[in-house]
Image (cartoon, rainbow, N blue to C red; front, side, top):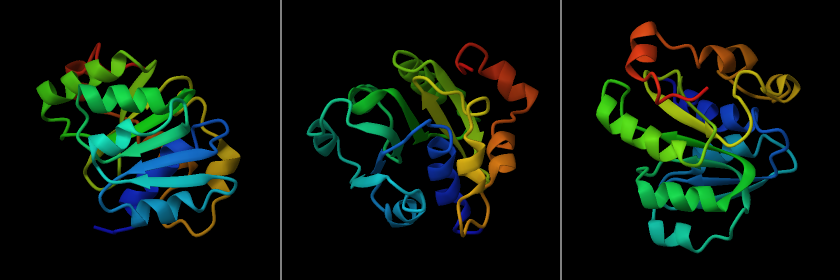
Length: 181
């Protein structure tokens, strides 16, 4: 699998959906590739944090526009991410395979307490991530100019962005009521 696909999709999908992102937090134990992708966006402050709940607790309220998280999403993690996100913030978080419906429904239920929109999307690697948004819809509010003006991308573009949210009927039926779009 091409190593550039995952970081491009984890970073550019939320950043090209958020209206005016200025601050991004990458929660990862290996954030180098994610940070490289985030730096393609101008006028943005990129922060990284190891996957550790204690470090997350120390961050200020409403201090980030976008959080990209590779940390296991339990109730404490999601509550702190909600606290540090701005009122129109977005979260992109890794999760178990969509085949593991019980675990994902628990996570989506937790996210549902804080976010208006919760949608899985394909990362182009056979995996999916969840985009949770307090305000912006990832296919209706995509910033086309930003998504197509990024230089040096190998995979991501505005067409891939929208297409990544297409899910087969069996997934739609299985997650009916859990996915919020």
